[in-house]
Each structure stands twice: as structure tokens, then as C-alpha cells.
Amino acid sequence: MKSETFRGLANAARPGALSVALLFAVAALAGCSHPDKQAAADASTTPQNVTLTKTQLKRIHFYTVAPSSYQNTVDATGVVGFDDNQATSVMAPISGPVTRLLVNPGDQVKKGQPLAMVASPDFAAAISAYRKAVDSARTARKLADQDKDLVKHQGVSEREAEQAQTDASNAEADRNAALQALLGLGVDPKDIKAVQAGLPIAHIEGMIRAPIAGTVVQRSITVGQLLQAGSTPCFTIADLSRVWVKTQLFGSDPALVKAGDSAEIDMGDGSKPLAGKVTYVAAEVDPDTRATLARVQVDNPDGLLKKQMYVSVKIHSANAETGLRIPVEAILRDDENLPFVYVTQPDGSFARKHVTLGARNDGQYVITKGLRPGDRIVIDGSIFLMFMQTQ
Image (cartoon, rainbow, N blue to C red; front, side, top):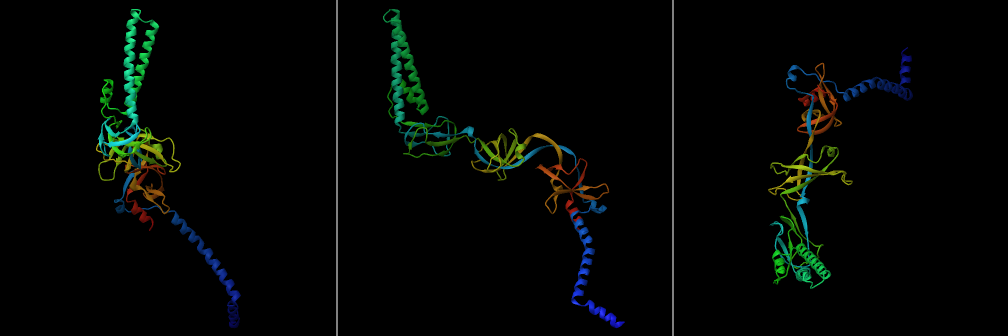
């Protein structure tokens, strides 16, 4: 009997038999352990509700979800620029070399103030043409008046008198056109009066004048530079008491912003934000940046905002909306970075509830999906609940 038993053990110890036995053993172990592992995996992906003691509950603060009225706030960045309605590039009205520069960048100028002097043949020709037009108009009007008197005494025919009147009117029209040309060139009114009075002008020199009042922010010419009328930029003048802040809106933000919305401009230096107003929202998206341009108009009486300065912009929508909002501190993130909150259950436990976040403003998130009015969520102590749930 012992020998038979020994033979059976010996046969079982053979390599072939041992391999088969091991395979059956491994298969049996795998079949027995699989349900336990699957249950553990399911438990790890589906967190169980958390139940706290009375002592622990004293440290938990709650918030009851309810509909409320709110105004959307959009946060963006912007770049300061000139108000194009109060800024202009001064082009050379006449040709010729610059003889004198009368202002420097940063100078405050009034409308009509001289900016530079130019030795311009165009200027001299315009004054000469006006002088001739004044003399011709004066002579033609004198002859017309004489013919008007002579026709009464039959000294000239009515046809001749009418022709004289026509010639006088044409001469006066030419004179007025020559005067407008001088005004367009910025000729000194004193020189115009001298021409009208038949007086000589001692020094004929062209002048570039400021078309608007403001600050000289750029000077593009130098003494001796040859200017070409209508094509050479000379100065840039801007009224800096009001500027534009251009900002880019992304995603769903353009739908929340409209012309007339109020805005706050923060320069990031700790000073009080400046008040502004949205005056323009583009009707198209930039194909390169996929952003929508918006423009904010800001009063800048102290000149704190400078061109090309980067600022933070907070735009407050004027349209009120109604929805569910919860405090920001109630939001947690799971392992997949999905937002969730802890909601009180009928049995007193706390369960995770994933939510969809909308706009954030005034320390609250708009909840577009996941909660209902009346839900009681945790706003202080949610991190403790998360810790208890993972134990």
C-alpha cells in the first residue's frame, strides 16, 4: 500500500503532470479572485456616501440652492489706445523743406496753433493767386457798378451792363476759391488781411497748424526735411482725456457683452479701477485668434492710461438673468478634474453630485446642470468630507 502511494506521488512529480497540476491550480485561483477584484474596482469608481457624527456635523456649513437674479461679469485683458474720434495724424498741407519746428512731443496745443514752418513755393503761389484774384474782383465789381449807372443814362447797353455784372460775379467767385485755398493751407489770418488791404507781406513762409486741440504724441519730421503735400505725415495729435481700451473676448463671453455695458479698468498697480463703458462689440470673429474684439471707452483726465499699456478689464452685463448659483468654495474636483459638490441626502449622509459650471462672478458659479432648487450642499467642510470618503 505504501509502495502504491509512493508511486502515485512519484508520477505526480513528473514534469508533464506537474505542469498540468499547476495550470489547474492557477486557473482555479484566478477564477476565485476575479469577483473580488472587480468589486473593489467598482467600489473605487463609485464613492460611497459619507456619514458624520454629531460632533463632526457641527463643523459643516450648508447652503440651500435657490434661483436668484444676477448679472454676468466677464474678465478679460485689454490694450490702451487713442480714441480715434479725438486723435488725428497731421499731414503736410504744402510741399517744401521744413524751416522751423515749433512744438515737441508731449506739448499741449490748441486748435489752429502753429506746429512747424515750411519754405513752400506752393504757399507763395497761393498767396500770389489770391492777391491777383482780389484785385481782379475789385476791378470787375467797380466796372460793373459803373455800367449799372451808365445804363440809366443810356451810356451803355443793357446787354453790356449785364455782361459786366456776370464778369464781376465770376471774379468774386475766383477770389473766394483762392481764399479757401489759403485757409486750407493754414495761412495766418493777418497775412490774409494784408493781402485784402493790398499791403505787401514781408516774409512769405508756409505753416502747419494743429487741426484739433490735444497733446502732441508724435513728431515725424525734422528741420530741412522735404515735405510732399498730402502724403508726408508730420505730427500725431490726440486728446488724451479719453482713451479706448481694446479687449478680446473668447468662447461664450461675446454673447454676454453688449454696447452700453459698464466696465472697470484695473492697471494692476493697486490704484482704484477706472470706470468705462463698452461702446463697440465686433460682429465677426478674428480668424487668426478666434476672438471677438470689444472696445471700452474710458475717461482719462489724469493721463494715467498710456497707449499700448496692458490692463485688466471687468465687464458687467446690463441684462439681468435668473438661475442657480452656488459659492465657489463648494466646488471640488475629482480624479478626472470634473467639478462636483456634496449634497445632503434624506438619510443624513452626503453624496457626490457632479455639476456643470457656467459663468463665475461675485464669488459664485452659475450651475447649468446637476442641481435643483432646494438641494442642500456643503460649502464649508467639503474637503473634510472628501478626506473621510477616501478612507
